[in-house]
Length: 389
Length: 250
Ligand SMILES: Nc1ncnc2c1ncn2[C@@H]1O[C@H](COP(=O)(O)OP(=O)(O)O)[C@@H](O)[C@H]1O
Ligand SMILES: [Mg+2]
Image 1 (cartoon, rainbow over the protein chains, first blue to last red):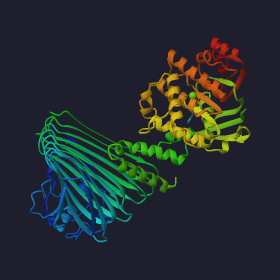
Image 2 (image 1 turned 90 degrees about the horizontal axis):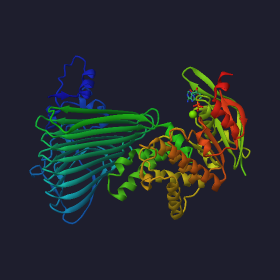
Image 3 (image 1 turned 45 degrees about the vertical axis):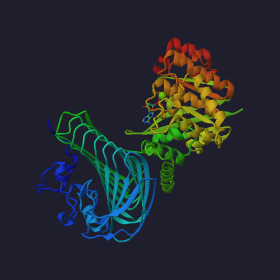
Image 4 (image 1 turned 90 degrees about the vertical axis):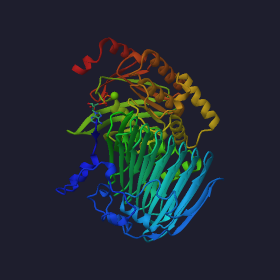
């Protein structure tokens, strides 16, 4: 049995009347480490449908500068870090670029920062990526969890950036890895991040993307299963203010049998021209029998003038699966909830806080790190206070 | 001793067909310690009265006033009214996803009192009130009204009333959707709260059955946006026997 859902592709053909763009299956999309293989970015391409090239401030150029700023790294015993070149076995082992800014960063960042999480033990690492650049620049990180590792890595982006980033995530056989990527940039920053994960046999990845600060933040996260028994949870949370553009693109490639994926992204928006985009591509290939997948995106629009696009795409090449589903909903702030809370003496601002925090709680509770949970809660409260509503 | 006065209240609501007047001159005075029942057919405007007292933004007061101990309630925001001592147990309580009952109750209590309750006594108070209402202790971990049965929603409303200790409580059809046992438990909760806090009660109901458990001092028959008749508890008995027909057809 073959069933294909092609919401995004339909949108694409709408935007390209007469161009005769063939509807391609997700894995046929161009992949290359060579930036010149990619045409100039155009809204006619599905992946650039929402993000206009001028938002990227030059990240789509052929050549980018090396990263300017600091990597502040803390880690537990047993974790090793090193700068490695393209000749290193880990380099390029989790995936290769599918988009122009990603390929540009691939070629421009001559070395990658490799964090290795030791086999058969528990470990953790925090990497603060503190950018100080105001020209288009590039960085490449690799997170590798060895066999049976149990590890958490927090990648915390801050500062001023025009940055294209590749993060490779390698989850070894039977490893359990949590990767949390926080985008908390200063206001004018532009960030294109490509996070590619490859999962080994019976491994488990929890991937969490939190986008708060920055003018344009576009994170493309993908998971590829290489062996049966893989389990991925892709979680995301974002809060867009007036003028902010936050995009999240997901791609889960079920290429082998008996893997499980859960995608849950939640976003809040407030203010004029706050714009978020969520696109979730899930592909279940012919061989991927016994797949179990579900993806969900919900957006809460707190004010007029904000816009949330949400596009789930489920492409299924085999009927022999456990389950496949998706849900997507964007709704306005519910005045009845506000009334109910205010009728219990709670002020309007506090009531909004409660509702938004409640909405995002499902994601925040997944972090499993009290300091970080508290920090994100505070950030959300600061965002809400900023609206002055 | 407090007094809630409603004088010549006219209320409109905006509908697709234009502005519609629902309340057409309501007069009512409630003192602390008194229990008033408002009874009336569906669509007569009972909930509109309740929402207007609480300050729901959908309803516009075009004439008249509401005073709480002489203070102009209509000038107050919804939350100010609650902090001034008005409480509405909703006919249709809304879900607040991701907000636990325990967080909600504590936040509301803190807002009403102007300071956070002492933790130890608060936990004891919540537990005691929940035991009385025959609510399971895991209830506080659930999200507000999410997946609650009809009966659980109503118990939760009464739980809030017990804990927030208002000066005046308006109960909008708290009896509807309750089975016999639940009706008894909820009614006992109301009576207990009334005994300990001596608040004024405005009990809105379509049926007489809850009046077996909660004895009203005054009964008002509400028809077409105003009070058509008032009397003592005996009026409820007559309604039980005769229904609303004679008011509606009149
Ligand atoms: N928000 C509203 N929008 C439109 N019509 C309303 C609204 N609220 C109440 N009404 C109308 O006002 C009348 C009285 O409603 P309500 O106060 O709910 O009556 P009751 O509680 O006595 O059943 C009904 O005809 C109802 O349809
Ligand atoms: Mg009603």
